[in-house]
Image (cartoon, rainbow over all chains, first blue to last red; front, side):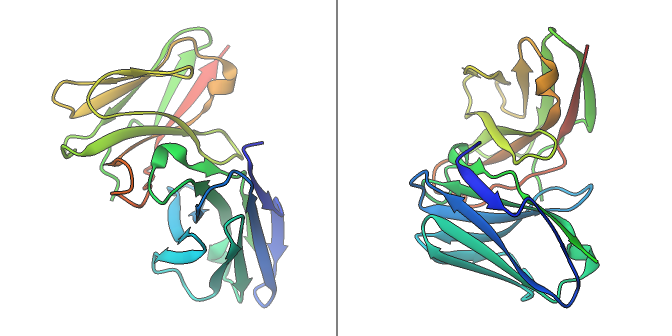
Length: 114
Length: 112
C-alpha cells in the first residue's frame, strides 16, 4: 500500500458506456496526476492538478474528463471510449508539482474497452 | 522525447549486484538523474536521484560519471523481488521541470 488508492482495479466497459476512475490520497499532497500506460509503450502523462486546479492537459481527447474536487481526490470520467484506450491508468501524487522524487503512484486501474 | 538510452533487458543472478546503465549524453547542467522502477501490475516506485555526486540510500547506489553523460544504478544484492522495469529519467530538479517523462526502461530479471 503506497498511500495512493485507485478504484476499481479492473474495469471492462463498452464503447457507449460512461464510467469513472477514482484516485484517493491521504498523504497531504497538493498535486495529483493521471498517467496512461498502454501495452509496450512508456507511461504517458495525461493531466496534472495542483491545489485542485488543472495545470496541464497533454492533448488528451475530450472523451477523458478529469475532475479534482479536493486535494485528496481525483477522478477520470470516461465516455464513448475506443478499444485503443484500453490501458493501465495510473494516478500519482506529490507534495508540489515537480519534485519527482516525491511522486507516489497508485497500483492503477486496468481498463479494457470492448 | 525521453532523453535517456537504456538497454531493453538484463538478467542478474540472485544475490549478485545488478548494474543498470543509462546514457544521457545531452543532459543539461541543471538536470538531475532520477531512477524509478515498476514491478509488474504496480505503479512506479521512486528509487534514487542525483545531480553529479554519487548517491546511496537503503535501496540502491547511483554512480554518475564525471562528465555526467552516463550513470549506473547499482542494486548491491539483487533479490527475486527486484525483478521489474527500471526507468532512468533526466529533468530539472525541484519545481522547474514539471513533468516526469518515462522512457522504455530496462526490464531486469533476477534469476535464482
